[in-house]
Length: 187
Image 1 (cartoon, rainbow, N blue to C red):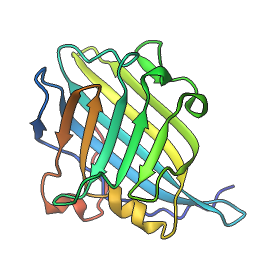
Image 2 (image 1 turned 90 degrees about the vertical axis):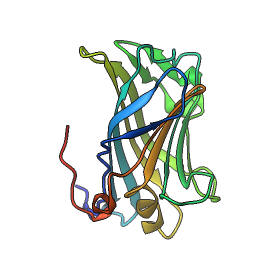
Image 3 (image 1 turned 45 degrees about the vertical axis):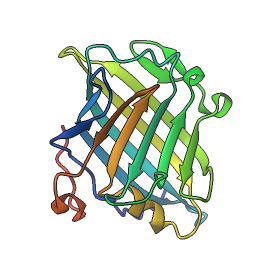
């Protein structure tokens, strides 16, 4: 049984978006949760759960396009401090798209300048919904460098961007209240 030391990074529930893609890929809402999990051996890892609701008439075919999700503190400096990079070859069509085998296809999670983090568990899905929107979900467990809390700070209260091929959308925190640490309401 895991001793779960739950330290939540503030989630985002964005009410507006900045659209930078010509075709109109938008993040309607997004939510990020991160927690530190401690194994019985004392080893720690970070569990990140991310969900975004995307709107677009035609989401690009992710079997040909790479997908990138990144988090950046508002007013921060590029590159994104926490990024998930999913090559196109990772996605398999099956009632939407999902990552079949993250270890063999080149999924990377990068934090700042420290380079790629060790991924212990990873799942990503992009699924069309009945209302014409798409839901993009990522669940990942990573072994971060010290200090472990720096990763939580990178995803908590940060602007989120999603890029599918050349289509890019960004979701910004609604206000300073989104970084207070209070759990967001699920959608």
